[in-house]
Amino acid sequence: MVSKGKNIMLFAGNSNIGLAKGIADDLGLPLGAAEVKKFSDGEVSVSLGESVRGRDIFVIQSLSQPTNDNVMELLIMLDALKRASAGRITAVIPYFGYARQDRKAKERDPISAKLMADIITVAGANSVLTMDLHAAQIQGFFNIPVDNLLGVSVLAPYFAKKFGKKPENLVLVSPDHGSVTRVRKFSKFVDAPLAIIDKRRPEANQVEVMSIIGDVRGKEVLLIDDMIDTAGTLCKGAEALVEVGGATKVYACASHGVLSGPALERLEKSHISELILLDTIKAPENAPEKIKFLSSAHVFAEAIKRIYEDESVSELSSVQ
Image (cartoon, rainbow, N blue to C red; front, top):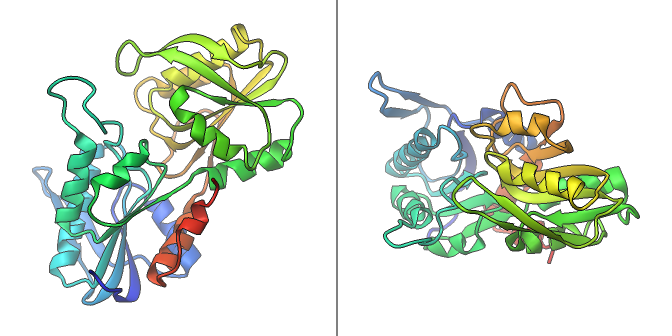
């Protein structure tokens, strides 16, 4: 068992410097001196600029685009810290990439999320702090402690302030059957009825909406998901809610804005009036005005503080 190191230190890769600085500012700490760059051939180079011997280290790095570059930065930073005799190393991964590959969907498929868990552990992490894993069972892929924070704790208060805690004309919508639990947790903050979009996905990044379970006619609706990638699912769901279900206005929120491929163009043209995302992934510079980002820095900072002080982190995600 790894004991707690002495004196907390924060380090960050290049994936989301803004969030890392926000976490550091919230904790009243500087980011550790580290040079993370690439050699001319594209290989990642990491050089620590100060001693970490015996320290309690937290490495902040989202595994977002460019995913493989950011993965390698994290792994090499972990290895550098381990070889520099850090006391305890926590990988703070606001967005955990490869999480959607959590099972064999067909024969001869890899389970890439399990591979990620293995290599992060081998690289030197003693524990992991993340937010809204796409599949909760990924925590079991690790043989080290994993704390999985809930984005609902940041998103729901925003909408509770916007609509009130018990709005009369709002329906919370799950984009599929798998997200119902997430929506129910959201309803602890915003007490509104629930609807579900029943969909069929013929292949990756394509979705065909089949029907809407629940009454949204004449209502404002809030679509709640964990991540938005190409935005095909979200935009088709919003279209169905308005054109089939009869909803009057569509809002949406998610913890992770992957926003790859045609996502921004789709969102700009969609029925969605406002989309709220967390800053677990660096915001694109050309995001439409309808997309707003909320800071998750305080939640991560509080979790880091509790981990360092050996206090309960589950209280931060205690919504049942």
